[in-house]
Image 1 (tube, each protein chain N blue to C red):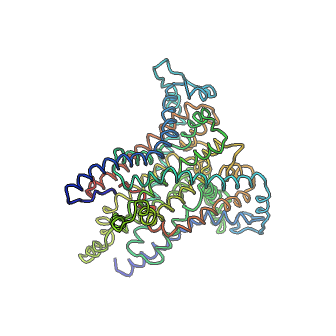
Image 2: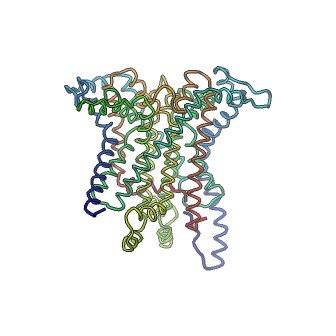
Image 3: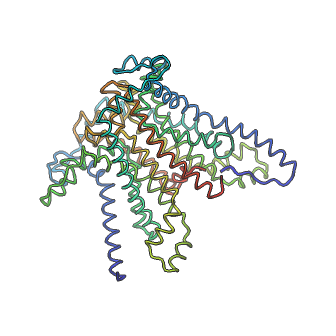
Length: 273
Length: 315
């Protein structure tokens, strides 16, 4: 095939691929976003007939929706904090120590994701009734914690192991104590990876709906569990407004760590080493 | 990760051995907390669930056994597989299983093709356009799954964008919402970012020198892709495939929102058995079927990592 024809075909192919990708990924979001501001929208128009902000008013003035937003914003940071306390020392251990069962533990922590969440919550219910955790905030914290453990162990472990030992040894040789070396060298250099892990953990906890619903409903509702009922009981536009609200923390947080996520912290974190 | 630094003097080597055993104990203890949490809140329930599915309804299983319907009890210490029989003789189960496997295969294939395309374009051409595409492909990471499912449902519904666009030119587009196609689209959508990150980083790590040498020798793009890029990034590709497949096979939210009532994915089916039909034992049988399938896929991941570790001389 002559070179210019091949080149033209390549460009057309790339353009077609790009258009398909853009519509595939961004289309549904833009469509939903338009619904949040739509007053009347007749099929088959591609844009609403008239625009309005009253659906935002509906959402903000609703008591139940407001309390679910509050619950989400209160519970999720607690979960991330507990996850950090439980998992970060383990991440350091996985990175810096050799001990029997190290690889087994790493795989085991990841393997628990292979069990379908709904099935897990079904049996977790029995344990919760026995421990008195049903319908409590502590119960919800534990359920959301389960989803964050992989992110708070694997990704920080990769970050810790990427810190060159030579730097730590140089600091020790210069006379610094172990604690000082840890806080000023190791932790400092591993911080981007830890932050990526924390953000992924925050998002996993924030978006957790199924287990939270089984444990908390109907007394304690978070934004995602509220979404399930919203979709069924309110007009499309209300669900669209709530969707935008629910997506805001994700967008803000991920934009903040975007540089590190794209820079490979996420991909590095999931290689077994 | 944990390398042992070489120590020249015998005395320091001695100290090193003692240090190693003490640090092994320290490492083990530090690594315990998340393992304990998982063992208590995932391991114990899974073991209880396994026992309950074969009829052991005492102890911690007594509440759910008392509340549930159609519960089969074990004969003393002899397990009963009646619940498994209930599920496997139901033709709906086999339809759901077929749908689940089909959807998993289709969405994984779509994800690999899209992510592979983006990764290859980024590697071989680079430039702002490739970076834009990869940035767009990461966007689903920002969006909670509940919202993504709802957005995809409205996009492909009877009055959604697809139908509206075709109606503008007088054509009838199909309604994909509430069908298996919407589940495939939704699953591919939510799995795309991770696959793009893995495959793109895998392709980026192939040295320029290899590609240039091949080009100098006269190899075309297709040949470079087939003989250099793909073999050298097998591990990240396998990781992307297994993560996607495991995520899709047991999924609940995407098929619940976007899929049909029947046949549906096993994740939705098992939730239905538990909440709507109040048959917890049968629900758990389904959970174990999904777990077995996911574990099989996960074994592929472990093998791939082991192989790469052995090749790099780390094992």
